[in-house]
Amino acid sequence: MNKQAQTQRPRSLWGPLVYLRTMLVFALFWAGVSWWTANPILLPSPWAVLNAAVELVRDLEIFEHVGISLGRMVLSIGIACVLAIPMGLAMGLNRRFERIVEPLFDMLRPISGIAWIPLALFIFGIGNALPVFIMTYAAFFPILLGTVAGVDSVDRRLINAARTMGISQRAIVLRVVIPAALPGLLVAVRLGLAVSWTAVVAAELIGAPSGLGYGVQWYRELLMTPQVMTFIATIGLIGYLCDTGIRWLNQRLTPWAVERK
Image (cartoon, rainbow, N blue to C red):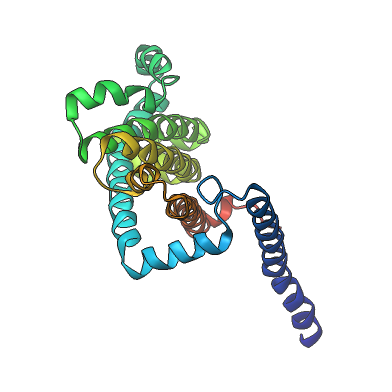
């Protein structure tokens, strides 16, 4: 046991060391390019961005924008799940219904949520409604398609056996279809979350008076590039943490579907 623990400990430490080494190389490359350009507005140094990040954290400004953007994302994902999951279940269980509504979704799906921003500005104006609408629209289709794919992956013999036993359709959906399709549903929510997080930043750049996207736009107009890069890094970090949380939830709820290495 001691030898095994000793061999596993270096392996567990190797990942963070590789990450730190990669980030150090990136920071040195960034500092070199910043020194070569000699233009702090075009490309500030890592030290300048770090100072800007410390200042934004000290003033609690960045936490305010993070909370607003995360609140919009949670609300949008909730609305998208309420709309897309029942629709996906109905499409997966009823082929006739799927053939009726699928052409409409196939026509709307290629249209980016960002393309609706000009029209949404006229309808919702500047505020919380516009980014929530754009995020919900962006997250709806990945969750819908993932739900349909999850239902299609359910063994039809399980559904037929439940029907033979006289179980109601509602009980079949709740007790058979949803548990069997849960891995696919979680993957769909993960994709929807990633798409909606990208969409909220684009929507906040134009149609919101707060949030991370608004912070990027505000400091860009002030030519404060270190603050802009701080907000951009925060957007990437929050997206990574959200994706990691969904993957952790997937491992907890569907351990049988997680590939073991």
